[in-house]
Image (tube, rainbow, N blue to C red; front, side, top):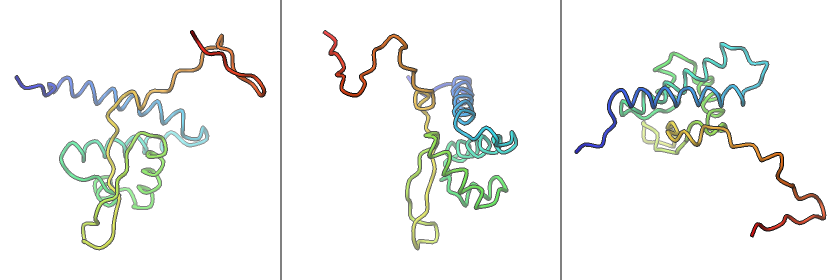
Amino acid sequence: MDKLPTMQARKTLLGSLLHAAWERMKETLPEDMTGNMKTQYLGIYSAIIILHESGETPTATSLSEFTGTSYPSISKITRELVRMGIVGRHQILASHGKGIQYSFEPLYQLRNLRREPEPSVDAPKAGPGRRQRKKR
């Protein structure tokens, strides 16, 4: 029996990924950044997913051509998406055969996109000169 997810399951997963990525972006991007700029980050993330799912290698050049966004803007946005932990970056051989370029891939694990749980307020914290007690 084939274990591939149904189209509906894939749409649900991708919707969840986009929502989780958007939440991470809203938390991480500067508050004074305009909504249009934040939406551009989500658009580039979506383009990375589309190119990756279609079998193409998402690079800054292919993203620039696909979205019509300038190469410097793509470079800046992808650098931020990597820093946020939303996108992975890998070195590959440049298409012209001389040098390297970076390819990008969406991180499909939702747990990587969700915020880490806050420590419990009740939990004692070790301060300077204090040792944390071991649990028995």
